Image 1 (cartoon, rainbow, N blue to C red):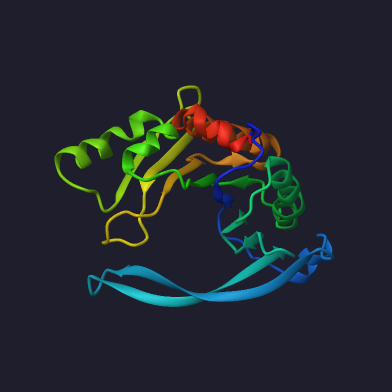
Image 2 (spheres, helix red, strand yellow):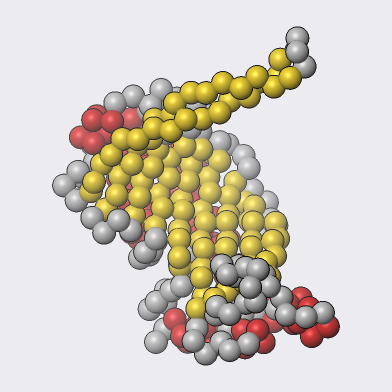
Length: 251
């Protein structure tokens, strides 16, 4: 997201590109084209189940194959690049800013796409998971200081009329008003990792997952599509918070 705050509540950020299956090739060749002085490179594999419908038996036949996974981590283990023969991604557990993401994308994602002559991707996703925590939250209604009231109305109704909620999660899927090519899956609420015990932790989730449903040309549209996804995420986030939270992030 582009709005600059001094701090953030981002727990995880994922930028992912999916494409038709390829021959993943040589990991060593990829390492030579990247900055391997500041990163840790590793090879992994995992079993994948495949199911096909057997017309003769009218049942599903199951087979397994092994998927090779390329991984790159920074020295702090806060950034991960991961690639298989069907996708590549960047994942952050300590997100800095979009400038860092773009730099890493150029070094790892674009190098990977060029190395494999991938000219078109089938899907692009950009996901921001905010875990907002505050010691000042003592009861559910206290969230009204930080979270937009429209996102809290349902929980306050339940608490007032029915009882104490043990978990409060909602999901909305939408297309932004100004861009029909971008879709947003927006999850918000309190997960409560101590479920089914009553909610005691003061953390609120704003999980904003923006993605495309149509193929994207890498050379022509990748950069603008990333900007569109980022803009959509920012609009949803800013519409979901109150001025008090903005002040907290700018302390």
